Image 1 (cartoon, rainbow, N blue to C red):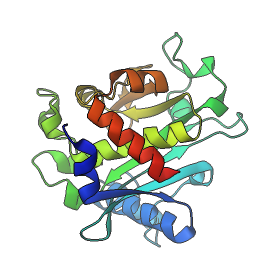
Image 2: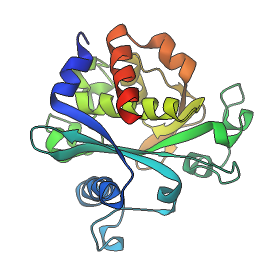
Image 3: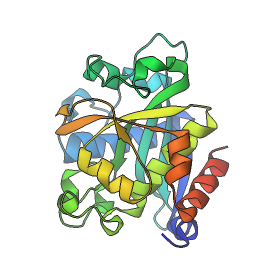
Image 4: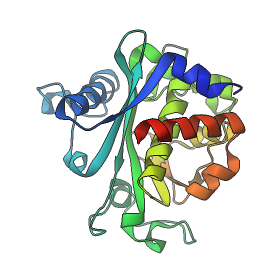
Length: 236
């Protein structure tokens, strides 16, 4: 974790995708990972090679540029509900079944939270044993050994990038559907998500998790804080 920001920006740069050609970069990467590699989505539904859905129009998109090759190494989107009326995907998938408590989504207006979605890392950056079966490269031994050495720099950059974007947009918390083993692995890196509902069968065993801005700042190591601050500045 020492000199994390310097190491990260030696190899990668986080880009906010706003123009159609920039958003295409993220959509094509999603197609490669979610349709061609993992088969989560039907590739025949996207003959133009761009995986998309109705949430993209109200999402902020980012991709991670690999400086040496000029290729997109990873991407994510942050889905918003500007009018507060349109539910986010995790709310519909979980059918409103959330654990009661201060972090349940119904305790905050939708305009004040978002959902991290369509996290994907290109297959060329998921080459270690066990990583190929995960869209963001979580090694298969992560359940038994949640150690940051098994967590690729690109995936950590995506989660911190999503957090940076959420903070820049003034959101108080973000939700994500993910595997419990990924949540444990992120915790070992100081990115502490809290589970707010049951694990269900959703492209594997996944559950709803949330992180607040306060929890993010409280738990991050100093080097990760530096990377987060640099990512926020770049996304401005």
